[in-house]
Length: 250
Image (tube, rainbow, N blue to C red; front, top):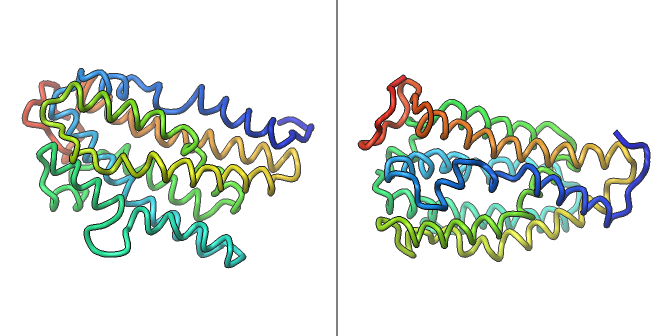
């Protein structure tokens, strides 16, 4: 831990360096996904497991919203709940993610039950929700800063999946297009917040550690997918088994 207080610009540079090194865009599973080198069943497994992350995002945001001390801060953070939950049935990011799982051939009831979820996915996502609920507001806000790096991976994902998978359509990827605008707005607010509220070297270190933690959460989810569905392809008991799975059943 440094005992030197960084300037706001230096803090931002340090955060962006963490993203360059640790963001899950670099994970082998994502490289396979974007390059069209996964079977349909492996794409289904990714969409199914990622649903749990998507549906828990508003839960973690609601826990943070309840702790924010001012109406201005609560109004700002509340937009994230609407982005994911929508303001009416069938709207919002979670509903759009179900368009993706439908498009790759999964049943809504099965997806929303989370019955086929990998244990690694559940542990990682639950750890993130608990982190935001239990840590300081500053750390909770900082953990959302992976959104600084989201537009690049979203653009790569949309282009790669549309190019390489004949079962993917433009409407299948409806979740991602709004995020190209939402993520930069959200990350701009969160970045400004941590720059304004991290007043000590200790607080700045906590901000950096929170972003590292969040990167680890995203990376761990892909580790679980890679182990279960790519190599060594051992699926834990009770988890989703694709029709085209060729590995060893756990």
